[in-house]
Image (spheres, rainbow, N blue to C red):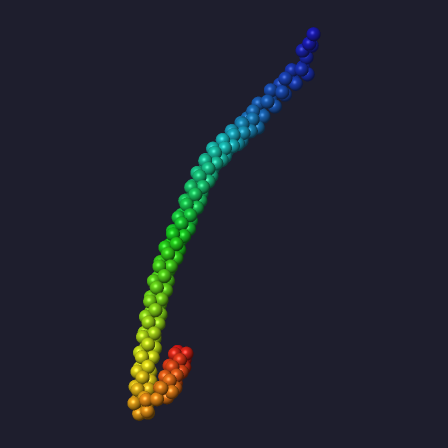
Length: 164
């Protein structure tokens, strides 16, 4: 059995006094510090959750902006490609038209040169014919002389034709 004596009573009394002192000076401030810490942790957790939600919103906005930027870049590339194709087609049309104009011009110049050459040849033939006729009339109508004059006229005509 337990023997109740003065020492045991003194120990109980000391225990209750220490508990009362600790309750007044240590327990209440410790509880208030713990409560403040609990509230601060709860506040930090709430702030962290808000920050996480904001970060997710920012990330979603970033993804949307990135997608919009990519789409805009693709649109710009498509427009530039179409413009380049239109410009190329327009340049081809202009080049073909210019080639056709130059071809027509060259054909006209060639026809004019041919016409001038024919006129020059005609004038030379007429001059030679008149000269031959004059020599035939001036000379005696000898067949040898006529053959010789005709050969000379043909030679002159060939030399003029070859000169073209």
